[in-house]
Amino acid sequence: MPKIKVNDINMYYEVHGEGFPLVMIMGLSANTDWWTQDLIDSLADDFKVIIFDNRGAGKTENSNRDFSIKMLADDTVSLTNNLGIDRFYLFGISMGGMIAQEVAINYPERVEKLILGATNCGGSKQVLPEQEVLDILSRPRENLTPEEVIEGTIPLLYTEEFIKNNPEFIENYKRELLKTPISPESFERQIKAIMSFNTGMKLKKISCPTLIIHGKKDVLIPYENAEILDKRIPNSKVILLEESGHSFFQPNTEIVIKSMKEFLK
Image (cartoon, rainbow, N blue to C red; front, side, top):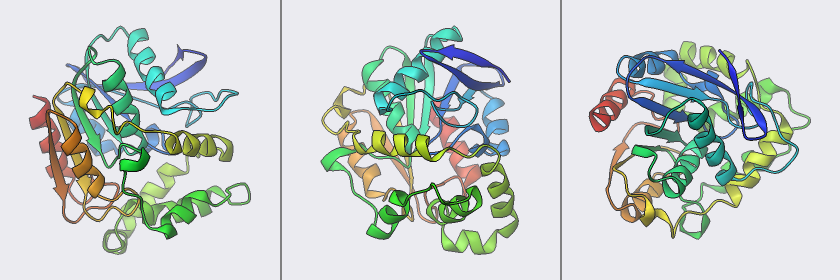
């Protein structure tokens, strides 16, 4: 798949399927490899699905300056401009949901409908995870192998029960995550961008219909953040998944995809 000039970088992107555009934004340290193929294939049956690697992640170039969530939102819109896409559905998960909020707030004329997954509004309004999780996120990565980083990441994404009961899925997913691991430098820049992100007082500016999806067993971004978003975004509804962690598509893939398609149609 190709790269395209986006602001000051060359961005890697993929297009799957045909129909009304659905732009999907990945989260912290993630890239296009983190989307599962069954999800892409199912959504591509109904939409033109655009996925891409954020600045400094995956196959997209880095830049010699710090990131902000607003900068990553501007990158997203620049990508759609260069692909000739005017209006689109927008789905962001985790940090990608933060980016999606900034897109919807700053470019309201571009977003037809918005899906926010496992994310928060940042700032003082957010509900933080337990200190143990914060310690994992803040530990230096320079002396860790990619394998060690992924081993520490998996328990943040999935519940203990799911990991125990689905060893083959977990091993296959680890291999996908190890294809193009993020550099320690880019990870630190993304963390700094997340720490300075705050849309709490701007969420009322989101004018498009919004679906919020969150796993109730999310240890990385507690589900109470979904309820905060739902209260502050005018035209929103929330789905809480009882048995899901941060990566809420498991074990509810079919339910989540059905909910997304029903909302977008």
